Length: 281
Image: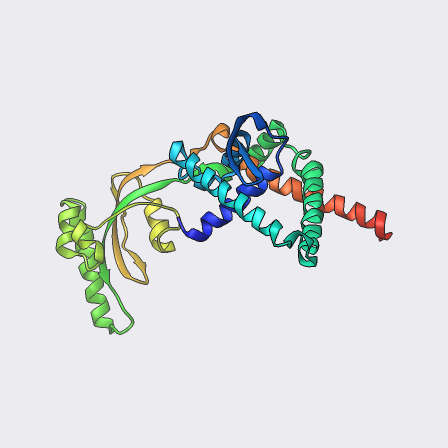
């Protein structure tokens, strides 16, 4: 972990510990000059550690790290007081800003974050109204043989390529497709027997995708398919139908999405009411 991250976490932990409820002084862990660190201080500090750092501060070693950081903060606090930092105008100005921001944040927490909630019925209604959003799309597993075409080909060369592709298409209906692809394909999937793996509608170029999804499982598409890459002979090896995702599986995802929007809407409306109240707008 970077040193700067530890410093930031230490400051957050110290602020949390200093603003907590009354301390149980009978369970003092450390005495540093005029300052004390209690078990409650340590517990609050551990609780304040951001989720992504929880593992780093877990166990006895983690508690010791937190305690060491609290000790450093208590030392620095006493040094700051000795230096008269709390008497300086800059300190007073910063404290005023901190108090104002804290008051505003607590107000928003009470009025918006804590009071705006979602009912299960709202989540289910969104799911039902946007049912297509919660589907695994249909997918197919296909292979192909590519015969390249390009704009530099003359008419004779193009006809020769088309004839070659047609001959391969005929062979594909009776011969092993993978072996045929390794022998004849001019595409990068040649070494894999033309295997393209699984894909959904739209992941391939439109002409290829439309043709492949129009074919049944185990079928060689009956016509050559031309794309910007050339002529394709397509074999659809397998298909997986689209599948609806159950409401319970996406309930949390829907909740996160809707609660943010609902809180924002309530916040905006509330602010407009306050502007009208204070400014007459």
